[in-house]
Image (cartoon, rainbow, N blue to C red; front, top):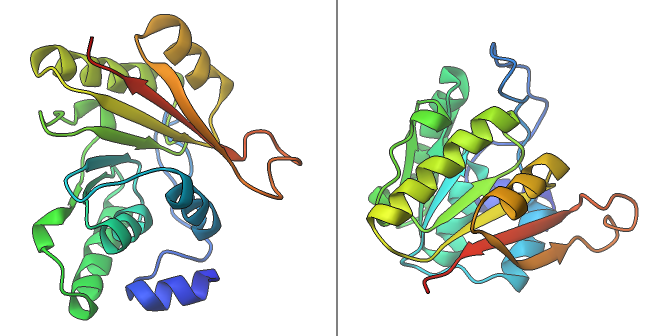
Amino acid sequence: MNDQTFEKLLNIRTSGEQKEYYESLHYNRYEPTSYYALEALSKEYDFKSDDRVIDFGCGKGRLNFYLNYFFDCYVTGIEMNKFFYQEALDNKKEYLKEHNRNCKKTNFLNCYAENYEVNPKDNKFYFFNPFSMQIFMKVILNILISVEEYNREVEIILYYPSQDYIYYLENFTPFTLKKEVKLHGLYALDVRERFSIYQFKLL
């Protein structure tokens, strides 16, 4: 399906040029994960209805609604920009008008990623290069502190991963590479066109 078909199915608006910019140099310009990429991920990676996914830099909430619609999992979008946060809330209203879903399974918070208090049930964390390396390190530390306090398996999902993110995870954290999902037709042109999934497993 193309973007327009997905948007109509989910009854949301997340496509089009993004004219809103972040004031902080630590936060990157909003760009939603393509539906093509989300389809590729969902074919090779398992999401379950009891998963609690955190999307850092969620923008208008595309990932939230996609995962909730197709997998019925919990998804919380973290967005520091008030404009995109409001767009996500508006999309949630429209999404729920068309789909009989538990409204508590799709949530959005207007806060900085590094200030998000990781819930003991959060188990999957999604990043599409939303911010600087400094912020990424703080967020990963928060996740590891939560895991130390509430022992559980968690996974990091990176789309179009930066080498800095990968180097940090592999050399300074207990996360190990679990799987890579390469986008057919795109990876050959750009090796970053992939999902890199890292896991923290219980001993």
